[in-house]
Image (cartoon, rainbow, N blue to C red; front, side, top):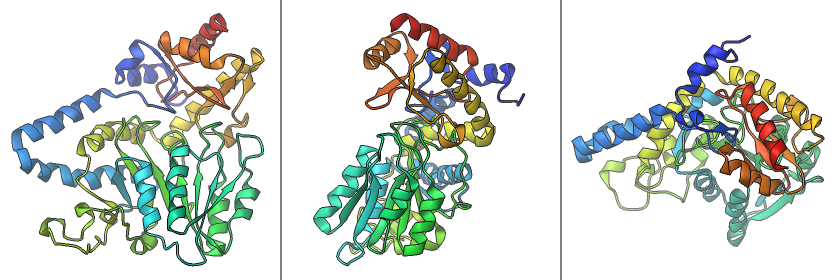
Length: 384
């Protein structure tokens, strides 16, 4: 038995997450539990602001790179290749503004199962000349790799795909899609929100062009700390028009337009950074780093297999892939009136969530116990 899977180790970990004392928490795929140290980080922000006023920036600005590089450690990115932003929609919009939509290579390829917010971002670029090409799902839960690969061609400027689909937890073959993009000279941007912190991957080994994600799910970092990775060799080609003074090569020179973009990943900056969101996210990132995503994954597979066994015993429809190697860290189950049952579960502080086309999503994390999985299904039995 590994250290993270042992009962003693789990009890030790749970003590750092107060909500676990008063709930059955199986919703880390949507909002990771808040670590006690996040409160300390907020207090630190307040203390520095209250004590130093504008001089607090001397503390805060260096933390942006520190926190970004911490995310880089989790995803296998070299130092200086990750930057922070308020959310993924803003960061992917910055990518979109760096591309030229006026020539023949003007297609954006994404899947019909892409998280809706990102489809809104990319569809809006049609007004500037982009052509969106949507790869349909045959079953509402997965998109075959061969369909994605076939959709990417000589006119593709960028493909934007999910590492795992929010409606099923099914993993995409990002390596195959990246190879296809490289063959035809297109870029690939992978949204890894659904996997980062529970499913191990390495952006360098995968040779990914770009990846984005956020902190409030498996990273237990709360809202307000999105991130973007850009392959270092590609960084100079991006000059985002979603920009601001923090993206300038000399931000404190306060030079008039036009902007001279920073050589570093700061070129993805914009206005004044949302420091509290970044600081409160760091304790969760550190927890993931200290445990290691491979160890977290090992425990998650065991717990999700337990969920699947319970669901099969009850003859419930399972919305997620049965094979562990094909899914991220949660399992969807569906049945008649699942949305109502989900509301009742949450009312009893059994935290899960519901998505149309999927059913109830159950997401165990490193702090979850076997007993919680069993208790969830016992409670479910009383409500169906």
